[in-house]
Amino acid sequence: PLDEVVNNGVNGSKTEELIPRLENLQDQRFHIIVIHTGGNDIVRFTPVEEAAQDLEKVLQLAKNISEHVIVLHSGDVGSAILLPFGTRSMYTKRTLAYRDAWMRVTKEYGAHYVDLFVEKQSDPFSQNPKKYYAADLFHPSGDGYGIWFEQIEKKLDSIGV
Image 1 (tube, one colour):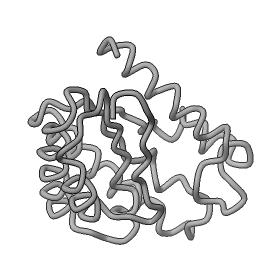
Image 2: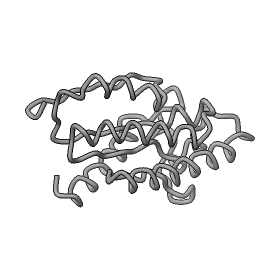
Image 3: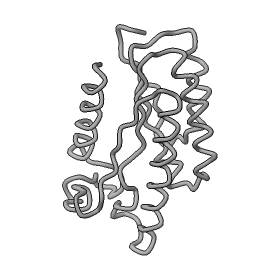
Image 4: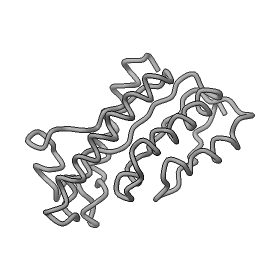
């Protein structure tokens, strides 16, 4: 609906799980849709091309009900201090593969991608994990989500929404 905020997010969801949620909204119209997905696919080892195909379906459905669709997944999952040290580079590689796929698919479907990836040497999450990670050492803290929100705001400003 154009005059309210609707949150259909479910913690822990993979991209494919958004498809039926969006199918159930096809009789509605939204001013903007923000889709935050992919992080769980990264950590749960969904093959990147399978997740990209799921994102294509998600964007087809989202574009039916909104002119403005914003997509983001995560920052560098490999920077999460919860992860064992020897696995972090693998998660960074997966994050980058998802980033490439998400940028390609969002462009193809006329959606807008919010890039949250920052190289380790400049990444606030890597530089100050106690501030930017929550107590679980995996999810962002309020300050961490604040950084992401700033990126979303910049994208909204750049597209005039």
